[in-house]
Image 1 (cartoon, rainbow, N blue to C red):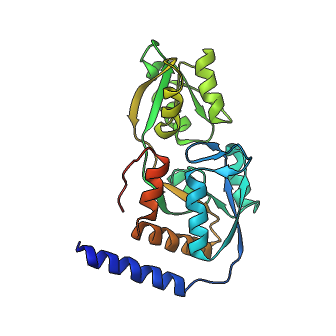
Image 2: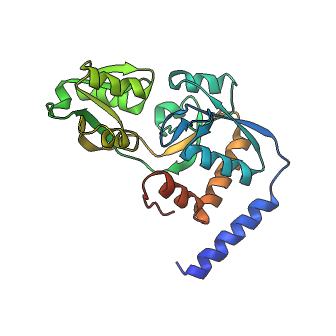
Amino acid sequence: MNYLVKIAGAAALAAAFAATAVSAQTVRMGTEGAYPPYNFINDDGQVDGFEKDVGDELCKRAGLDCVWVTNDWDSIIPNLVSGNYDTIIAGMSITDERDEVIDFTQEYFPPDPSAYVALAGASKDVMNGVVSAQTATIQAAYVASSGATVVEFATPEETVAAVRSGEADAVLADFAYLNPIVEASNGELMIVDQSVMIGGGVGMGIRESDGELKGKMNAAIDSMKADGTLTALIAKWFDGRVVNY
């Protein structure tokens, strides 16, 4: 595509988006706050991470006044449906099963590989062992269907602790989550396999009845993709990873 045409198209999209902005309304952004670099609680006790940056920018572009709410992962979808917040922005992969219960925006992060991590020197045969995974995740479902024995935990920290304690032979989770833990383990942990592709891209979960909110967020995501802001935020939080939209 011609560079000037691409810039002009992005400018037109931004102008159209600004022209349709509405007066601010409060939207509660639900996240887990326990899955860095996607989302976590920083030293000041505030929600931080890639999705905090993305969510704040989406709200700004959509003309929304957004506040952040944290919720345990295993009940994050039921509490959205119940109305305790208005979106889920928590590293949630878009799947057919979830889409039967809630709606999703387009992806704001592409499909990411999952990784098996075990103690250094341990057997690499994870398919016949005990594998820990966070409950209600695509990884837990994958392990259960793989022939291995899955042990599920409420938090991602517990899944890694199970490997360290010997309760599990390996853990399966997003590579982006596990890799920093392995690098900081001083050789205690190792990546057994980092090429497991499951699930779709990461999208924002929204109640099926909130079509207007979905439309606003999709327009904001389009805008962030068009002007390079989303690409820059992915690079910032995921070790310089290059994703072009």
